[in-house]
Length: 444
Image (tube, rainbow, N blue to C red; front, side, top):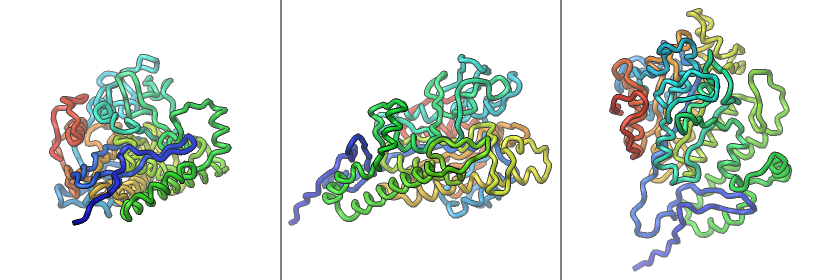
C-alpha cells in the first residue's frame, strides 16, 4: 500500500520578492491528494476592430457546418473547428434614433452595452453597463484583477470626437457604470506592471522613473522562490511552471526591445513608452499579455480595442498607407474597397495569433482555448454606409464545452447583439435578466 504525500499548493499562491509578485498558472499540485479536480474557470474576452468591414468579403458562403470561410476570415482556417461565425446580429441603439451624425461614437458606446449613448461632448455622458463589467460584478472578486482593458491607440475620454459625441464613447467599449467608462491601457509596460509588477505601492512619476532606471526583471526578483517551489513539484507541474515563466520572460524582452526602439513614427501613430514601432508586433504583444493574464487566472474578463472607433491608423506594412477611416468611405470605388478589405484581413490575421496562443497554452484538462469564449467584431457593419445591422461577429473558443465550433450560425435579421452576450453570461453562471435592448438568448 502506498501513501500519497503530494504537497498541495494554494491556488492563490504568489511568487514574491523585492516588491514584485507573480501569480501562478493552474498546477496539478493545486489539487490536494484524493480531491476531485476542479474544473477550469470560464474566461470571457472581447476583441474590437474599428470602422466596420467590407460585408461581401466578410460573410461566409453556406450555413451550419457546411460553409466556406470568406476572404477576410481565411486566416482562421487552421482554427475553423474552434470558431462560430454569427450573421444577423444588430445594434439598433447604434443608429441615430433622431440624434443625427455620430455613428462611430454610437458604435463604440453601444457595442458591449446595447444602449443608445447620450449625445454630448460634455461631462454629462450617459451610456450603460457593459457585458464584461456585469460579469466582473459577479466573478471579479475571484481574481487579482476584476477585468482587464487593453488597446492599441492612445485615447482620451473628454472632448468632442464625433459630431458632438464625447470621446468617451469612441475610445472605450467597457463601461463600469452608466457614467464611468473603463479606458483601455495602451502602454504594454504599464499593462505588464499592472499584471506582474509591484502595483500595490503607488509611485509618482519620479518614483516610477527611478524604478525603471534600476529595474530588474520580475522573474529575477522572484527567482529564488520559483526555484524553491519547483523542487516541490512533480515533472508535469515543473514543465508547466517553466513554460509559464518562459512566456512572462519573453513578454518582458519584447517590451524592453520596444523601449530601446528609437525609430521615429509619423502621426497618427503615436508611440507611448514600450510600444513596438511595428503595429503587428504591438498587437501581438498585447494579445500575449492577455493570454498570460488568463493563464495565471489574474483575471477572467478582458476587452481589447485594436483601434478606437473612427481610427486613422495606416497600414503601410500591407501596402495600405492611407488612413483607415477615410478609406472606409469608398463609395464603392474598387481600389479603395480593396484596401479596406486588406485591412480587415490583416486584423483577422492578428487575431489568429491570439487564437493560436490560446490553443497552445495548457490549462487544466485542456487548453485555454477550451476554457474561453472570445468575441471578435465591430460595432459597424458596412463602414461606408455606417450600418449597424448584420454586424461582423465571430466567437472563438469552447467555453468549457458549451460552444461547438466549426459553424456559420445565421440568426433572424436584426436579432440584438445583446442576446449573444446574455448567452455568454449564462455560460459563466452570471444571472442577468436583460442587457441593453436584449430580447432573449441565442442557441450557440
